[in-house]
Image (tube, rainbow, N blue to C red; front, side):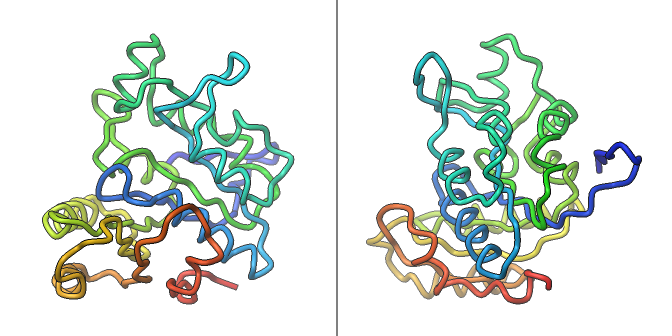
Length: 241
């Protein structure tokens, strides 16, 4: 774990979660924003960030990522600027380590932690961090998103994109996370295929293989509406007073 220290040389004590997934496009942003809203509804001040993002749009000669903008919108730390929310933004929709190499940027876990300093040291009760892609997505030639999660030191929430093949993806991801030693707060089944066959049977199969708590089953929903999603989540046991 990489510790950021304040001017008094004390570790910051904000709680938090690292949101990762079984793949890209499984609903990490939706879940991260929903957890952010749940915490805010409990009276918490929350900073939600996406440190690395690919597939950004150029607006006024600057790069912006839609997922990061969503997190910024729902975050209660309005004093942070966009670069504090998304310090590493890449235009091409490819794995971050490839985008970084193309742009001649040396991407590393330590560098991402340093670039997150303003967000991590803001006056927040909770930090919600969304990863890029799945937990094995490379950050550099020798580091992955899971290494980044371990460096931040926050427990992980795994978002499962429920679609054909999800059982295999979920079991492999969970076993890798478990063997790495990260703390897993739980997992969320997010239905991304509205025509998914044997939906409940698939979820039960995954539930038998995953020993972490199932925090909710989110049905297929168009758009990003965290407040609507909250009624499908059970977060009481992971949100501390």
